[in-house]
Figure 1 (cartoon, rainbow, N blue to C red):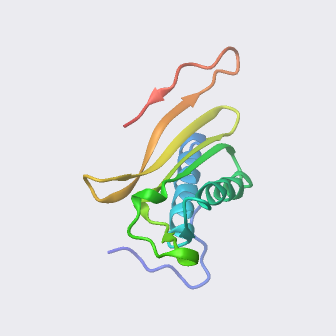
Figure 2 (tube, rainbow, N blue to C red):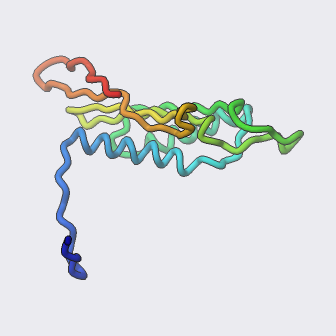
Length: 143
């Protein structure tokens, strides 16, 4: 049975590789996008601006090289009429891709709704390691 930690004792630091740190950060960023914005009112008119605002917010964070956010309001449920003709942002509407790098490594992760799973799936799309002595090697694709 594991020993209980003493009150005031600090946890031991975890050593992550640079790649693992970037993958962790990518997951945090995609999870943040998903959990912070689901439920926001959106319409075909406001979707592009909302997508840009989300991407710009994520670009402020460490390691981010690029962010792409897509919102497809037509994938949502019924809309109200007139002034109240909007939907709430749902998992089915949202896609995102983040590329993070630290100079030596670069990872790309994606968020997209998987209809077969009925779940917003986050996946590593690619990761690369760069050779400081020469050109970047090709990406190692992950599924």
